[in-house]
Picture 1 (tube, helix red, strand yellow):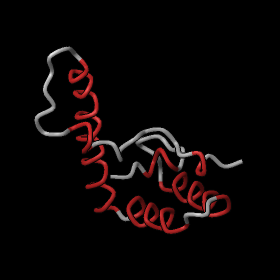
Picture 2: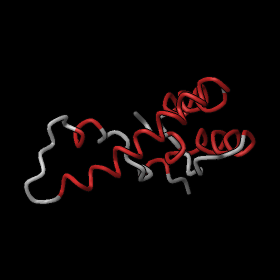
Picture 3: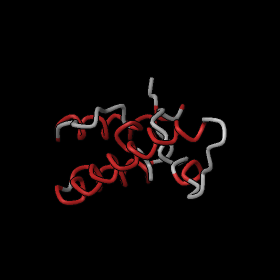
Length: 98
């Protein structure tokens, strides 16, 4: 799952105008326009945004639980580390703008 809000440099509870402004700005500096268009589709439609936020919250909880897997003797039986790798909260270098 892609973290569209982080990629756009937005907080979790970003408003509609904030999202619109960030998308317009991202279109100016990114070469991955499809990703920006995907973010726009997901973040600007009310129902889709609600599902996205719910899933986002679940991934954050799983990510927090992953810290337990770093303890000695921990077993990653459900491959959580591999399954959450795409949900990185850091902003990709090409999405940081100028």
